[in-house]
Length: 447
Ligand SMILES: Nc1ncnc2c1ncn2[C@@H]1O[C@H](COP(=O)(O)OP(=O)(O)OP(=O)(O)O)[C@@H](O)[C@H]1O
Ligand SMILES: [Mg+2]
Image (cartoon, rainbow, N blue to C red; front, side, top):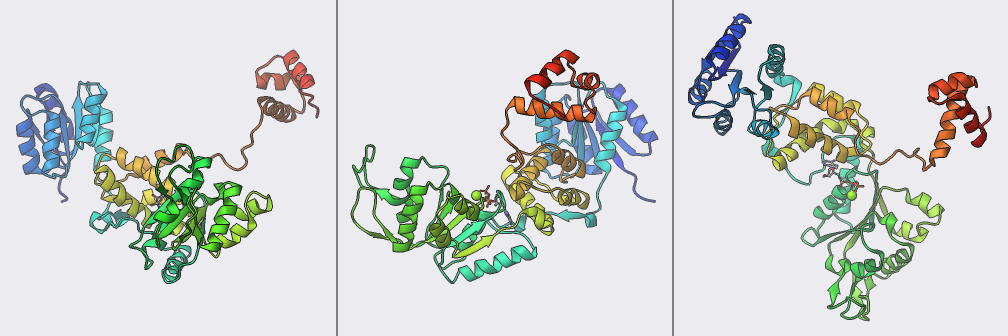
């Protein structure tokens, strides 16, 4: 016969203790009870139950202390805290100390049952990805799709030749990560990697930011300052969001790339530039060139070598590995210890389209890890997080329209739905017939 599931109940209210004991015994569980914290801890340590139900306010060692002790001794038992306290602080504390769930008194027995079922719904290891923290290496590009393997090869090739590289890809696809990989795999990996976001700098300071300036060259230039080009030495200069570089600076950048030397603002000494330029963009530069927003000659200079990182939805086979890797990363930063990711949760990740790419995946995982109460990333938690709208930029179809334009469109749609039956349309729109008639007139609507 299989081992009976064991529950330990710790509460100083003897009446409640007894009734819970009876209730769970009748349901077929093996039950042991204790009326104070110390005895409860000892019981949990010796019996190693699957689940413990622990009251928060106990004589002597309290429920929170008990939770802490279980954590310190790494005792693997799902603990459900029950208490009369309703405040946020204790709830947060209890969850922080590793409680599986938190229920308020008076106890709703159906709810308690449901929580215990959830605590016991163990997922067999073969159906889950096991997360082993020891294998974590920072700044690795993870994936096994054909597309990514091609990128790995290119990074290898670029380690030998110091050409300019243009990385294109949607937001969050890993452009900066690839830029860093190019740098750290090259023979100049000991030299600086300098990143400059072309969209985040005040325009009239960009020039001095790039080329540096001599003391007194403009108001505020109190001392001589080296620019990013100079600091990069013979390492890598990463020009992020290159599409946002103002057009007059595009001309300067081009000239500089041709001459491979520059002067500080207000200076006259030529300084040699030996670094590799890696530029990145999430915009279509060729379209910008057609519209006259980006210099064609600079575009060709930059795309000596182009790396196109496909969006995550086009390489979904990378998702399982990415999830495993990112959970390790998040375990490190949050101090949580997620050890298992059920295949059912992975399936949910595979169904999603990830408009925000790997950054969005990382955000969702971070929330899932923070919300998890045990060492497993449960499917239902993933489902509810994926249902929430993510903070991604509005879709390309989004148009900046006035309210009256939208109002007119909406009224026409409703009217067409009702085949221009004014009474019916007015009812749906929640306005009177005369109001609808006057709107049709003022907005100049017709079938
Ligand atoms: N293949 C990958 N393996 C592991 N982590 C990745 C991978 N791709 C991206 N990431 C991670 O996803 C996040 C976003 O990547 P990154 O900042 O490089 O994207 P980006 O393309 O530069 O985005 P944006 O256009 O928004 O600046 C980072 O935390 C990065 O480490
Ligand atoms: Mg970036």
